[in-house]
Length: 135
Ligand SMILES: [Zn+2]
Ligand SMILES: [Zn+2]
Image (cartoon, rainbow, N blue to C red; front, side, top):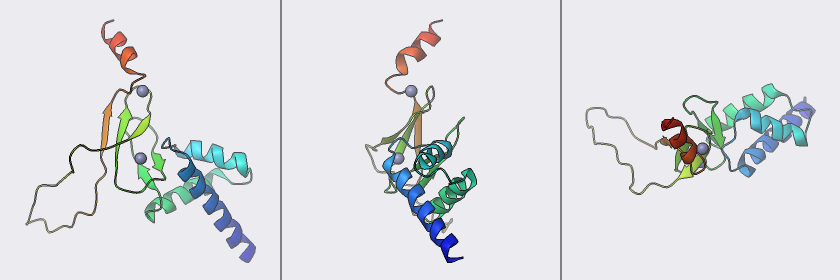
């Protein structure tokens, strides 16, 4: 039992380390590919389960994107994202202004953060998008 627990911890650390080392906001499948390249015995189910646990614990971010698989982010400080509608690239984005919700005394909830993803076309995809439009 102790051995199994240790193995689980090692696998979990490897998964966390992999997410933190990739700055591309990888999908679970991409993380699985990287993890198994280093440790082939890790199962897909283990990777997926640990990713969701790590996200619940706030150690990584779990980002849902439109028309594509969910992404994961090792940077947990408050930041926004830009999602390219053509190639699916997800990039970090700085806000020009802070995001402030409208005060609503009746709601009584406490805002602790936000998830904000802007969408559009990345630098590589703009010409292609314009090409499609003119045809
Ligand atoms: Zn793109
Ligand atoms: Zn990010």
